[in-house]
Image 1 (cartoon, helix red, strand yellow):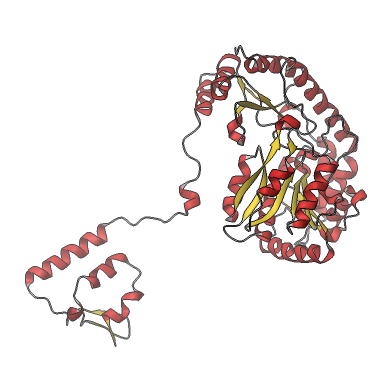
Image 2 (spheres, rainbow, N blue to C red):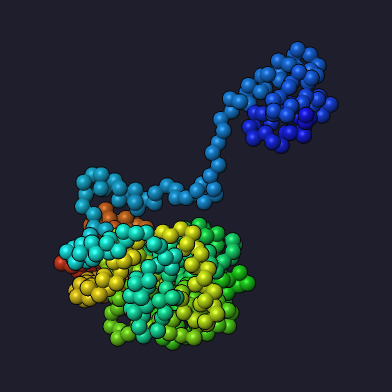
Length: 453
């Protein structure tokens, strides 16, 4: 037998707990027998009035609605739509034609990996997955093909981890390198997705400047000044989204020196590395003396295959640090085994048979970029050296300009503050119908001029 006040902590129901809290300590003389049955007989009630009060309170407690608990992240997710997107949705409902210069989805403009080749690749890949034998780092043939892609850097297939996309690669890195409340250094202008990934990982994003006056070059002094005792990694995005900056070799050596002085790894996002303008080669942090580098990329942009959901990390640097990182990532990935097996077995052939398509794809992107720059003639801005996006300063309120452009010309672009850019800028992609890019960007140029529209 056990006294009620000794068993109070075992009651999960709020009404049950309230019931037993109604009594003073002297009144808690009821007992619970060994079967868990409540014997309320011995409880002393001062009067029938108190008995009625007890029953009323208990009934009221049972009628109170119980609330499901949600995390702080879920409670604060999203919010009301921005006025620009409220306008966008209204125009769409009214049947207006809207040119979206935000998404940068090449598939929507007819750029797709050849369907017949892809179908054949996937058929062959499916044959290899009849018996499920997962590899937590990723299927070896896929890792070998990815390592071959980085031939000049001599990356071992054993140091490649396949993920279901670059966003998950970031999350893996954050969980590998940080504890709750730590900081990751990220370039500003930034990208909204990082904030969500960081919150899911329990870390904070701290920003270092890209200098617009120098073509959005990395401000190395500011980067080093932003490092605190809580900093755990430096993110480098090159080509950068949304400015189109491509970090030069000297910049990356500077970042590597800072990383070495402060014992910080570099997370290098290179998803746009195939799309360079006016450059003979692509500098990568993996080619520097940085102590530890995680190079992120994937099939999404490289082969116009976002639906394949194949990304990867190539880990380079000090041998002991690389070994420790791969071992931990092996366990993280093994916990979920999230990457589609057929897609993994398709990777080698996608690389091998995709060369001609990629050449045409890159030529098309180059034409779109050239048409956009021509359309912005007379506007002063840092021309993109890589990627799919352009950031343009304007001489008027960016919210008004974006709304006016959408309302008058049916063109959707983003105001700069979406990417932590100040003061007024517009951000847009030049991934568009190649015959209409110049026309669309001439309209954008009118918005960007001091006279406005």
